[in-house]
Figure 1 (cartoon, rainbow, N blue to C red):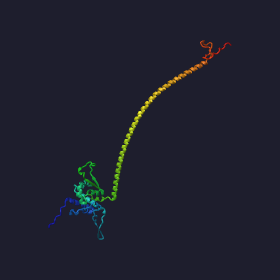
Figure 2: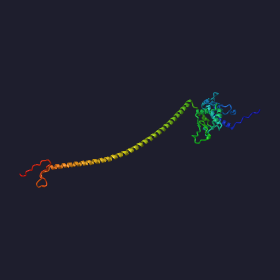
Figure 3: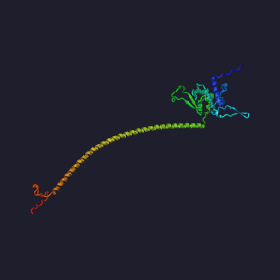
Figure 4: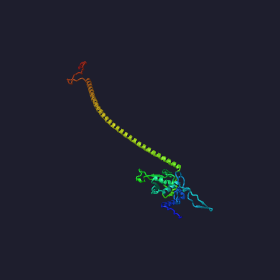
Length: 328
């Protein structure tokens, strides 16, 4: 019976084996564990993945590759390697899955610093079951979140160069998860419960800060509105008071003008009456002075005019004095 020739290996399989050989050179042959019984047995040099769900993500991908033997006293002893290169199976599976996935379903980004899931439904239905015991994309995304991956999704409102063809793409980013850089995987750590609690606390604080900012913004708007209303009402009252003051000022001026004219006439009457009274008093005073002057005047001399009376003036009702005897 003729020997059967082995099945030809596709170029994609060759590239995958070369890449995995490079990865194994860094991390050891067991960085990728056996996963599928359906994998081609001819690719035994490449790493196959075992099935694992999100609960098994804490398992590492096996022990390190054997280190060079140490010769001690003629006995061969294998050196125990450090566990610093032991990777969680979830990371190793995810890295290999993105490398081998159909580019129309999931692939690396152009820059190689993130990977893109182009069709979530197809990815969950046909890709995830090959590496994990589930087909739940949300569970896969949650596990990525535990390892510090960020989910980036195009938002039409926030993205100016929105493309409808890539709107459904879901991108996952981690600074240590890069194409052709498997040596960086060792720096990706799964968040512990305390880290997750701290992260939850931080998210809670961020939410509280956001709520406080919103509350402060609302209070600021309410304050500005009330201040504007108060300013408007105050200006209106000031305008009303100013108008009333102007009217009152005009009325006072009119009253002062009327009172001033009345006071002027009253003053004139007072002056007139005062002048008249003064004149009458002066006339009486002059009359009294004249009377007193006549009573105290001396007798007439002979050489005085004969027209003048020789005796003193006798008032009515008074007795005429006897004539004096001039013969001595």
